[in-house]
Image (cartoon, rainbow, N blue to C red; front, top):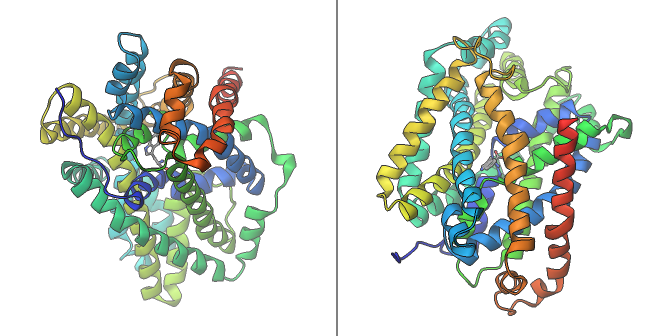
Length: 451
Ligand code: TRP
């Protein structure tokens, strides 16, 4: 059945939606602590290289598949390679973003809680502040409530559809986010003692460069650009035929990198100014920053509350625009392939992600004893997705475009039937990356993970 499919209204809308997907907890929460753990500037250099050489080709591969087929990930595989095993790749990449959505919403929920908590940091005792994160995430009901609120917000936007929901929401939110992160970064840089943090982020110490740094940087690049699970593929399927795949890819990757580095500048100088170790791990944003806000609160409660609120608002909004893109993958599948109504599709996915998310949330508290292969439920799902499913999906997408699709179709899609001169000129390089470099890089990561 041919149904009229929605599209994004303009190039600006495409880039904002894709940047909205890319920019999220991965940039503000994950990137600063990964950079902190893996040696600062040296990690950042590898991360930038991995983004350009490995991640960007996957981005183009997903864009080509999505727009060529004009369908979500499962439908795309069926249409471009009918009757082959590739449909299982389609199915895998429908399921994995829903799993990511489940645990991502738990952390999204934390940012909802912290938004409200911002009004209290100034008045809390120091030990109350430092102990809060641990108490909060290990409790039963509050994190579940926050997770529920977050998922309902996501579902609400996705329900609005591509134009009226996703496009409207991201077009308004993303420019605000850029201004906010800039304000916060400038504030962080103005703190006394922040110079060490800057130095940490720009002065590479290559002795810190180990194979695990490289693996971590690649994983971060894939996660941050939302690759390997059909998110970009699905969004690209909403691109009009005269949009430019090269430009939207470069634009999205550029914004994503820029935002991650700004987030680093927003977080690290403050961390150093407070005399905290940069490798403090995943707690850096939720534990360390409130501690810093609390210290500021002694001098100026209003400034403390204001900066804290802006900061957690930024995290929440960024997380929402990313979670929306994860939900849309499943919604596209259910509405296109299963002929479901949009609202029942949203309800079904929200319900599923809610249940799995509740288990993830409880795995910080009452269910902390439940281990899967030695990991808590949350950690297991995160590792399964970040370390395995994303690179695997990315690998399969590059192989599909590089070796399964006909080269003339790929050329046609990338250059809009040969009309885009700039794209023609870079086509060969992109194909080289898609066919050889990206697959080889990903396989190398798998091997290093196994040994
Ligand atoms: N890229 C987002 C972030 O940085 C998260 C995200 C959205 C994602 N869609 C994805 C991660 C698909 C992996 C796969 O927070």
